Image 1 (cartoon, rainbow, N blue to C red):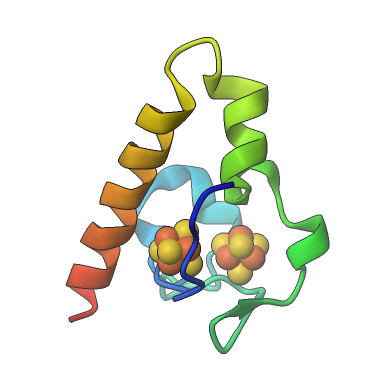
Image 2: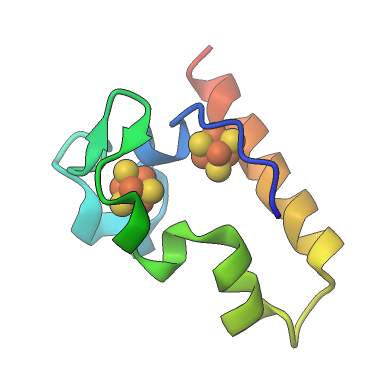
Length: 83
Ligand code: SF4
Ligand code: SF4
């Protein structure tokens, strides 16, 4: 499984990608974020599920290791934006 650190940075920067616009409460923060936790974790959308997204969409395109690396880079970038 992807090594998510549960920092919540991805859920506070939805305005960096149009595909998350429907979750954005208007300031880049997800309408379902409570502290650093997802309040709909068990039913969160596929685009919030890294492993399920890989299995459903990206497994024909790249290796799981490469997909994880891309996601980790995005996590690090978002955390860097937050200081
Ligand atoms: S930014 Fe990355 S490590 Fe942090 S909660 Fe999101 S997926 Fe997990
Ligand atoms: S639905 Fe949950 S996991 Fe997805 S962006 Fe919102 S708070 Fe984060």
